[in-house]
Length: 151
Image 1 (spheres, rainbow, N blue to C red):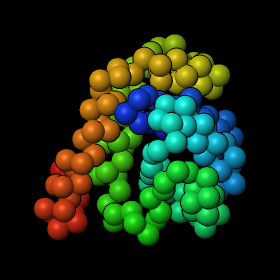
Image 2 (image 1 turned 90 degrees about the vertical axis):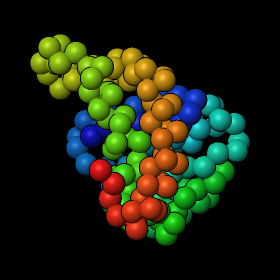
Image 3 (image 1 turned 60 degrees about the vertical axis):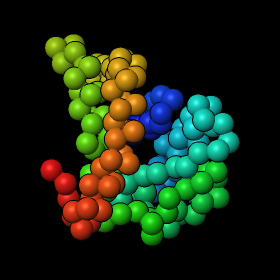
């Protein structure tokens, strides 16, 4: 499992869980600490944290931790019903990461992890910036589409 944070100023360090799934406790202790550190480093003290509707993200412990630690936070109660259309990773960034990877180098779990870490640094800043800035455009399209998925 790979977790990665993104903002207009850059990408966080990837969190790679070699043993599979992420629950709320792992999400808080592994990913959210990186998100908080990266957000503060790149954006200062005035920024908003957003996540999707994955179970570890919507767990009450995660929601409480985010509300307590992030300068601002979009809670699951305020998150739209079709988050894949609004998550830059789902509509763009995972694909950008995959395109940066040298798939021929991957022969083991260790080389996969190494290649993910290398490839995160190769994602074109302009491409991830455009995907993040595209959020507002996508939000308007969903609103015009009555809250339904956009294509």
